[in-house]
Image (cartoon, rainbow over the protein chains, first blue to last red):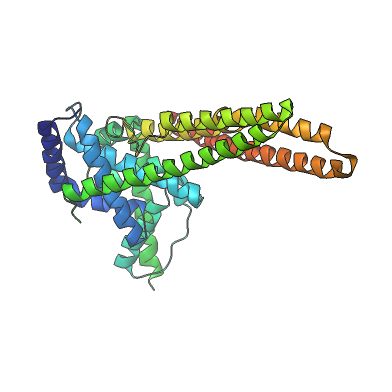
Length: 175
Length: 173
């Protein structure tokens, strides 16, 4: 049974994690849920999972890795539940590449399209792109996702190509 | 958006209460089955339907036991932070698939003996005028069972496909 000091330690570590990674977690939730109300619920679920999981945190990995794993895993559980209620086809990175570009102003198109693309991805591809956009390198993404460095490098290369072709399409489509 | 620890504790407690309420509803439903079958068993003079009702009571008791054993309030996967995303996602899909496959073990299997005994007795003892009606009831029961089995098997196969796809994706470099 957890002692008061154990619970206090868990609360303190959670406060530290929320302080350092709160903004990143909010960004991550945006990558998993488009609806603002549902996104608030998802974000709360992520924070709740994080707080509860920290009872078992023993420093086997960095706090950062733990936080991101819990967040992505909680969000993946959320996606699985949503798909049970409302089955939809999620896409891989190679299928995303073939999607048409919708004409909008350049900056808004870029942000909206990027968010839309991410929300349509399968869980593992979504985790790679969100982690890459958060500034993680291939090694960190590999540790987080369990994918090999070669696999991560291939996915990151595809992501860069998709982003480049998307932005280029926006500039061409503006006129 | 920030959440205080107090808010999270309150949310966790709310989830716990919701799951406990759901479990309580299941217990009450099982107790109703036990009560109805118990009364029917007591009032029936023939031995064969008594056995059928007793088997259904045993199935309801098993269900209550199973729910207490496995239906814990607000389970949090133990590996939420220690498992990488691939292992966690694959584990969740496997858990769901195995749950669907085990429907026979903890839902359909236990109630089947009682239903078969009562169904056979009703067919054998039905007067000729009511035989068609009894056959119709049996066919409806068979259709319901078969549909539940088929739907669960189909969902389990779909999850098998997703697990295999995930394994292929991981192996590709």
